Image (tube, rainbow, N blue to C red; front, side):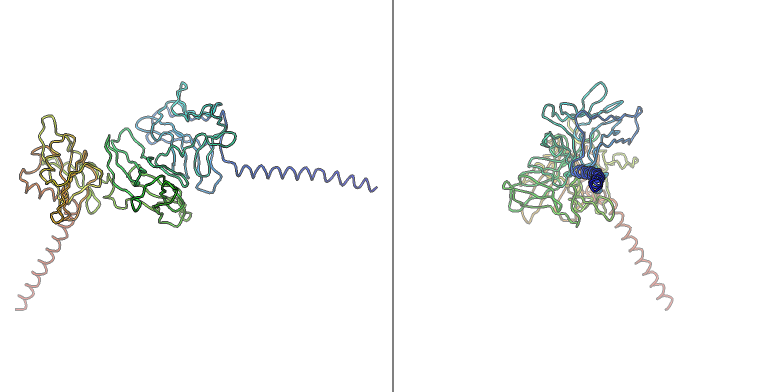
Length: 478
């Protein structure tokens, strides 16, 4: 009987042992799944259909996979977007709802009917349109690629069987630097370049500084910069949880643009609309991403705070430089004036006192008079304006020539700056310099002048009424 009992006990224990092994194996698989990076393998395909008719502001996305993190996590999507009357297809990475990488940032892949994402059997990641037309690819065929993955850092990678990275999105920065991402000197971020815009912005890592630039054709103008102390050289920059850190050739920290918040940073971004750049974190209290640092905090310091030929005033409003050749027209279009005035056209320089430009890095002449500065711009067909700075007490005289009239802002009186705009000859209200000066002051003041006039007028009216009331009271008493 005893052996029989033992045999029964063994029979009961065997399935329990198998069940425990099963649960152990399941736990191991779940643990490994939690540690492994989300992704897809060779032969993977995803297709998104394109609307037949064009729809303004249309955006369609199919998400492939996402990281196993608490919100906000990284997600990878195949996106269709309506741009300038066409549909663009691209592979994108999102942090929550914020796009942090885009395969079509520099070159759009415009398609019709459909867009196909494919990881080929020989390891090349491609975007394809109708008739097998390839619009974008990683160029990794024959390199042993096995999977497309998204790392917890937000880096989109192609890896081989040994998890060696063969291609990564971190090597192709767009307008964002993610935490942990490193950029070497001579690298830059750029705003998305639209066919309808003549300008685009760039955040550039240079040997002695990091700087923001407005790019216009073959010309570029800086409008913000940060330099390490003691003229030290930069080798690379890296975004940490506390700021953008600058390193030298010995991998030593030499400077930092710090975050002003308490939460760890998630990314640095160059804003496509304004040209400003900031450091961003996720706020658990508000459930959204916010800026903890911005390079430019005043509207008038932005390069395109106003349209071309507009002046940003003290009240952060725009005042146009209007040429009143047709006084009945009352147009407030700041782009009435066209630069150049060559090919037989005559021009003159319109002087605006106490007005400057936020745009820098332009050709400069020293020890020059205001008239000589004006003549230099008049003789140069490509010159649209000149900025003159003169200080008699320090014997400083500088002249800067510009190819465009942009980034203008009003300054306090007595700063020594004069902005000279090239205009068609005789297009002002009066040819006399003195009258033009008075008109320019009104234009530059804009809304500010009107506000001051109303305040002064109102105060004067109150004084007159008070004096009249006092005299009337005295007369009544007498």
